[in-house]
Image 1 (cartoon, rainbow, N blue to C red):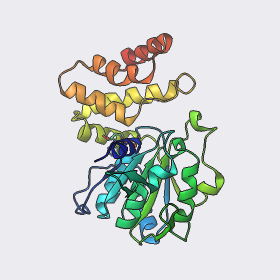
Image 2 (spheres, helix red, strand yellow):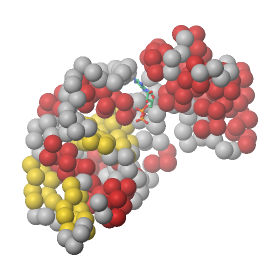
Image 3 (cartoon, rainbow, N blue to C red):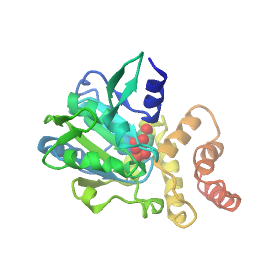
Image 4 (tube, helix red, strand yellow):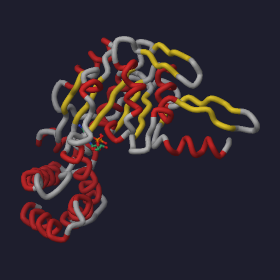
Length: 281
Ligand code: ADP
């Protein structure tokens, strides 16, 4: 298709529609932190949108993938970035061979298909995106498409899920109270040690002993990093370290590559983090 189309789909980030509804029971592995699966299912039943807060790499995306599969709904994920506009979500007219064609954006597609739409890191998106989310997120459940004059009513199966990382870099951006108050909210954090060990064994092919060591390392790093780092050792980074070890890399090297270097570029902080690695693993 046209150049315009290629450009338009690029700006969507990684929006991926699974064509058909997945089969329930075949859900990707997710180790629950508490009762979040029940909360998600109740929100779906009650047609309530859900806001998931939590640090990067703590399992938000996996949780949504897991629940979409369990509820047998297609999932459309959009990674929000600072250039993402309302038109990127809703759709736009594309210029083809001498004519213009309307192309649904991921939000519109999700409403039409009765999918679960997951907007990852929603605070990154441009402010005008909240305007299209508001009537969808409250009990109207409407998506007005200004450019085509359409007014879509979301079917009961449509669910809007957004996430953001309330770390200090986002304090200023935040979400407007008028937006937040339309969503039920769930706070996820790094999983408790036993849960995190189970994740590393399953996702990182770690032995129980390796999983225990990596979780110990994470706890030590999480204790000290509050003021030095924007982000700390996430479950995602631990999974990567475990995989490197499973593949034959020595443990400390794996921790340096997957965890320490991922967290900072600052020489002094690197030294401090490597010190922790030497002390713990
Ligand atoms: P987030 O969306 O919060 O940034 P992800 O959901 O992408 O984090 O999680 C990163 C990776 O960590 C996943 O791909 C998965 O391997 C692992 N992970 C984290 N938490 C869990 C969990 N509770 N159950 C299973 N895997 C998890």
